[in-house]
Structure formats: structure tokens, C-alpha cells
Amino acid sequence: MSSMSVSSDVRLKPFINGGLASLTAEIGTFPIDTAKTRLQVQGQVSDATCSEIRYRGMVHALYRVFREEGFRALYHGLPAGLLRQASYGTMKIGLYHYFKTRLALYANGTETLYMNIISGISAGAIAAAIANPTDVLKVRMQAATSIEYQRRQNVFLAFIKLYQSEGVKGLYRGVGPTSQRAAVVAGVLLPSYDFFKKILIQSGFEGNDVMTHFVASFLAGILGAIATNPIDVVKSRMMNQNTSKVKLHHFYQSSFDCCVQTIKTEGFMALYKGFTPSYLRLGPWNIIFFMTYEQLQRLSFT
Image (cartoon, rainbow, N blue to C red; front, top):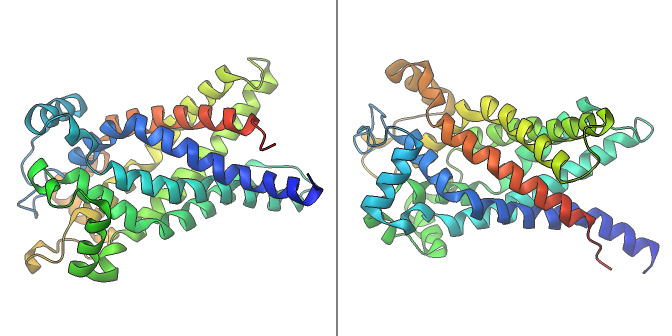
């Protein structure tokens, strides 16, 4: 294999392996994400369809969805979720490694936490903005009851219907908070994982092995959940509103307006609705992702 081919493979590996690891993590944690979405969109005073407090917590949400709508309801929106990870996950990890490698060239090949944070923020925002339509569809499918879901279970037909009823704006509804959240997630999770991994190896805790990857991803997940939950609540509410219905159902004019209305009508802690499932989803998601990704990175294309 020529040196040019090897160099190309090295640049492509983070994209390919990032996408594969993202798909694996998405499948493993999707029911928790469904519970998180249901918890975050409920209790909206201005939305009659979501005003009822149906779920008292993550476990109760999982139980009630399973009991009333069946096991398959826990995986509502999975096709859209996988499509999102195939695009967003692939771009996020690939761009992060590309950006941090390029920035390191200006520091004599040395990576710094500051450079990695910039790389993570940039990669997350760009990838999320491009993949936003898949995220809108995923949220709509997760928030829908089984009866509603039957009308939009085909992901491609659902895309067409969403575009026909709400246009391009509908596909990019919530792109602001989505990109903001992704920038924070990638800007916190990816650099913190690299940081904790480096510290653990240097401290002699373990080598560059599975246990190190597990602990580093666990710690990074805690930071990520604390930093991103308020943005995630706003994102879910923005994406779940449907402007093709009566005008009274157009509740939030912007992500800032959504944040203000949520605090005003439900209190500040409403921004941390779904925190437990958010972490219990983000934590395991990161552990599965990073451990899968690290193993894939050790494989060769040859």
C-alpha cells in the first residue's frame, strides 16, 4: 500500500469508526433516550398536548410507556436516531480528530486541552447543524404515542410529510439549541475524555486499556450531562412543537424565548427535567461509544 493510501486510511479511520461506534451506542441506550424525551416535553403550561405530568421519573416513564404502548414504543424513532448517528456521529468524531491534528501542527505537534476544546466545539456545532433534520424527526417520533407513531413510522415518508407540512424551516426547527448543545457536548466530552485518559495513563492507574477507557468515559459523561441538560430540554421542546397546527401551538419563538418561558412557568429546575435519564443515557452511551471506538481504532484496514 502506498504512503498516500496509508495516510488517507489514517484520516478516514476516525470518521468510519466514529460512525460505527455511534450506531452501536445508540442502539444500546435508545429506550433511555425515549424516556428522557418524554420527561422533557411534559408539563409545558402553554401546550395542552404536553401539559399533563404523565411520568414521575425515568423508571416510571419506561414502565408506563412499556405498559401502555408496548416494548416497541421504547424504540420509537430508532431509524431516525440511527440515521442521525450515521451522519452526526461520523462527522463529529472525524472532524474533531481532523481539527485537533491540524491545530497541533501549530504547536510543534503537541495537543493541548485548549486546542481540543476548540476542536470539539467546532466539530459538534458543524455536525449537528448538518444533521438537524434527522434529530427533529427522532424527537417527534419519540414524543409521539403509539397511535400517533403509526402515522409516521416510515422514516423516509415521515421526512417527506414533515417537509410538505412545515417546509425547510420545519426540518431545521431547533437548529440553534441543537448546535449549541452539540458544541457543548463535543466541547466537554471529547476533550475531557482525552484529558482523563491521559491523566489515568500518566498516573500509572492502568495502561491504554479497557479499564482506562471505561473510567475516562464515565467521568466525561458526568461533566457532559451537567453542562448540556438545560440546552437539551430547550432543544426537545423546540423540536416537538408543530407549527402546521393552529397558531396557538407555536409556543416558542426562539431558544431564548423557550428558556425564559420554561423558567417563568415551571421554575429554573425545569431546565434539569430528565437529568437522571439524561446522564443514565449519556453515561452508558459514552462508555459504549468510547470503548467500541478505541477497539475499532486498533484495527487496521489492511
